[in-house]
Each structure stands twice: as C-alpha cells, then as structure tokens.
Amino acid sequence: MTEMNRLRAIMLGLSTPGVRLFRNNCGALRDAEGRLIRYGVANPGGSDLIGWRSITVTPDMVGQKIAVFLAIEVKGERTRVTDHQRNFIGRVRADGGLAGVARTVEDALAIISPIP
Image (tube, rainbow, N blue to C red; front, side, top):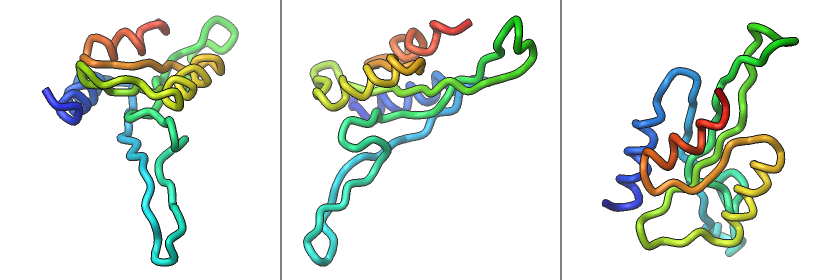
C-alpha cells in the first residue's frame, strides 16, 4: 500500500464525530526570482494530517467542549520519521496535544484514544 493510500485510509478511518483532520501539504519551491518559498504548517517537520479532537471537560467545565490539537505523521512500512518530524510530534505532545506516527488506521486510532 502506498503512503498516499495509507493517508486516505487513515482519514476515512478517523472521520468520526468530534475529529477533524486536514491534509497538511509541506514542501518548497523557488519563485520567479529564485527565492525559496516553504509552504505547509510547521514546515519543515509538520505532520501529514493536522486538526483537532473535540472533548468535553469535566467537572468544573461540564458540558463545554474544547478542541485538542491533533497531528498524525503517516509513514509507509519502510519510511522513516525525520528529526524535524520527531521534534514536531514531541512539541505537540509536550504542549498537551495528541500526536504520533501511524502506518495503519489502528495506529491512528491509538494516537487519538488517550482522551476519553
């Protein structure tokens, strides 16, 4: 299965109420003057899929919803995580978000499951 097919399967597998994922295309190109233009959220290192998971906080904020940032780096069986990607995932986790590397839909579900 190609990495793009994995990404599509993960997006479909995680399309549940309260989860919003967006494809984060990262890359670079040279403009007409030869300047390097980088695009994508947190490039270099931003995860392939970014978004949020909605949760309800209890007990002092009963009934209110908040969005927890979510970042999923999709990899094929043999592809490796770069240092920039590892740092991005670590920073998201350190700041209270959900992040990780997924090679399957099950991997992705495990990333978003720490919150009830």
